[in-house]
Amino acid sequence: MKKQFDYDYLVIGGGSGGIASANRAAMRGARVALIEEAHLGGTCVNLGCVPKKIMWHVAEMMEAIHHYADGYGLEFESKPTLNFKKMMQNRDDFIHFLHGAYKRGLDSNGVEYINGRASFVDESTVKVNGETVTAEHILIATGGKPRRLDIPGGELGMVSDDVFRMEELPKSIAVIGGGYIGVEMSNIFHALGVDTHLFVRKSKPLNNFDSVICEGFAAISEAEGRKIQSNKTVTEVTELADGRYKLHFEDGTSHQTDMVLWATGRIPNTQDLELESAGVKCYPGGYIEVDRYQNTTGNRVYAVGDVTGRAELTPVAIAAGRHLSERLFNDQKNAYLDYSNIPTVIFTHPPIGTVGMTEEEANDLFPKEAIKIYKAEFTSMHSSITQNRQKTYMKLVCVGKREKVVGLHGIGKGMDEILQGFAVAIQMGATKKDFDRTIAIHPTAAEEFVTMK
Image 1 (cartoon, rainbow, N blue to C red):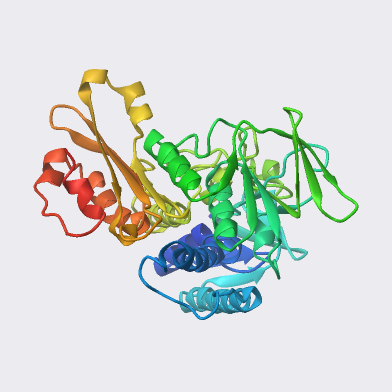
Image 2 (cartoon, helix red, strand yellow; image 1 turned 180 degrees about the horizontal axis):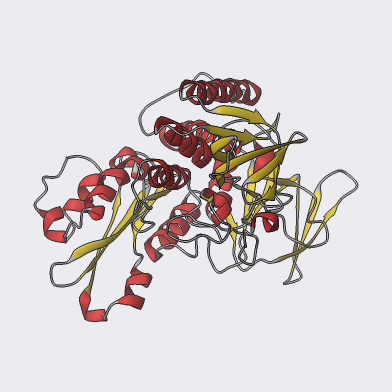
């Protein structure tokens, strides 16, 4: 006799991946409940993509006025100022609206929403708010959280979550970390007029990205006066008598600042879930072990999104969650997410776009004679009549006799919007000849990708 469950599908975590999977499963006829201890929307809506992008837009406008207004003949009776509290309030109002939109979406699909913190009792039973809930299938989509360095004084300063709770801007800030969060946040604070210093442990920021990205970002940063120090390992942070902070580095140097922002990676939200009770194993570092179908080592227990450590991006979690629900509740037995060719944007100033292999990755996989690289460097038209002639850097990585495009990378004005269409082309297997025979849109930055020689 088949065991009776409270639900067909129980989702732990109300972020992008969890909500998408819950809604899709319910649309396919499953009885679904979703457990979330905080606000619906997860990191992306509350402490990531959405509030970050709003601050990025504000910073972009402020930077455009600073760099380009004079060249375009724009004159102001007084210097534009930012009402930071007003911006933050309007941003928070928008996020509150999104909370309601997510709840209405769950309600319309018949997904039961349970506000509370979940922990496993066994592979089909979860405890929440002092009660037990059972389900035939359980999804873990609890996301991640910022990581601080385990050093003396590591508890001092902020992490990225705290940025979105700020009520006023500091006069100075030190951002620790050369990954995408570090460069995004340091660019935003710099554009908003904060004396910003970015400290990077490796030889350059964005060290894992294609060389054209690293080199282009460094060149633009230097030209526009951003303060970046590489090969800097923080060993200790101390709080000074005046409330400021002092960073101590491995090389014996130090730096004083009003605020410290740790952008030193993220860790999965797996603590207190009692995963061992469900037979769920984790990799070193706490990320949940999954196969291509998002199966964990627990029976009928699954995981998607940042908690798995695979391509920690909102659209990836959404796609993985939907594929999983189609497999479980719509008889698509072989449905799974292909993690190759995932387009990614870093919201620096200007933005960075990348999809597919880097030149360095291609060199590791293919003979040198099979690889052809096309590059372009030019002054984007938006800054052509100004003193700050901002450069754009682009690259195509092609492989084989047909010169299949396996990688596309760029940093420059509009790269965030340019990338999506080219990602479709690369996903479809486009070649350099396909690019070449596409008519260029002039005058745009995007046309460089179809006119490279």
